[in-house]
Image (cartoon, rainbow, N blue to C red; front, side):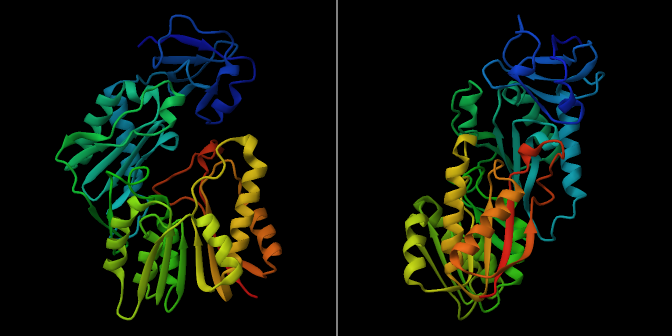
Length: 399
């Protein structure tokens, strides 16, 4: 069990000892020699004390992604089997809602498998290999998933832009093991029936990280009118209808989401309720609607990440603020704004500041009823702030 050794600059080991899983290029004492991209390496501090073991990629700004701090632990088939088993056991112990058949099995760095995402939809697994190191071990990973979870099929959706930053080619989606999934996989989320299109959907097919927020909205939706912006496949509206909302209006720019959305809405529509889906760009739509109405009891904002680069921070804060201001203008007095940000570059304090500025600009008096982070199947390493991406606020509009 001999691995190439890399030494860190003095002081660079502190974040790793505290549990952060990344080593940037500037932290290395000298340029490595004779180490192939994707190779496993041992990391030492400036005094040659062992810090941990990870995989190396000279093509990425993140030179090393850590896998273990235990020197006796080899990175082999057994390692991946043990870590995936531990991740799955964590989900089984995390009190997922009853009658829930879809959840995240592996959540990258937070499960000590940086660059790997695995989602379960009923009895099918969808995997994403984001990084070179995970790509090198793909067969060991797939073998472990098949053996431990025994799915009907394993489907890959590694058609993600993050691979290019790793020097990896785009990889087409495709079946890896078992039988092909149906066009729409049927799942339940706390008893709410939904369908997931893993072939054409975003990410792995569905945004599982918003589960708790959808369930909370369901409990607050009786008799309400709901405007669902960036609706995708209507997960929020499906839960609102399940909770006896009287009307939902979904808006999204992507026509590909409509077939799944229609099924999700119709499966949860109750007698006397109505639901509509509008294909439109939310930004100009909500700009115009804020000026002329109508108003809604609930407005949901779940936009894509608006901040990809730190240099765009000020611009993104302005866009988020304007979006939330317009949404607040559309909420009736006594109504509810459900707003989210999925950018890890927007901190919790930043997000509170966005709502504060938006409320002041819209001249509304608001109160935060709930502030939610990740659900239990998306655990967070406290030493890894980059993993704290999702923030959601339920705000009551008083006047």
